[in-house]
Image (cartoon, rainbow, N blue to C red; front, side, top):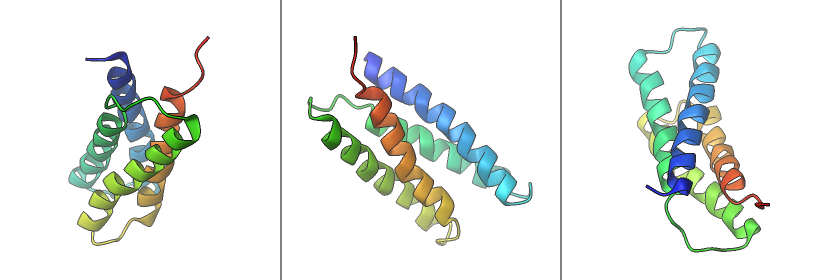
Length: 108
């Protein structure tokens, strides 16, 4: 497994935990375990897709790619909830950009 993939998966796990905490708090701590797990797993899948060995490109294009993948992956979760959690949907777009920004940062 490449370093990029491992970093993105770990990032997806961490961002998933952040997202789950936020969703759980927004639901007044009543969200079901199925919902919370599905949301976390969605972020892990986002990390998997963003972390794939994509060809080298400019940072701006990489950030756009992260947003696009965040949109596509998060839409799967959003549509499966009956379009009831727009905050998590939009957070997925932001998380895709965050992951790609971390992965495409300039190295010393």
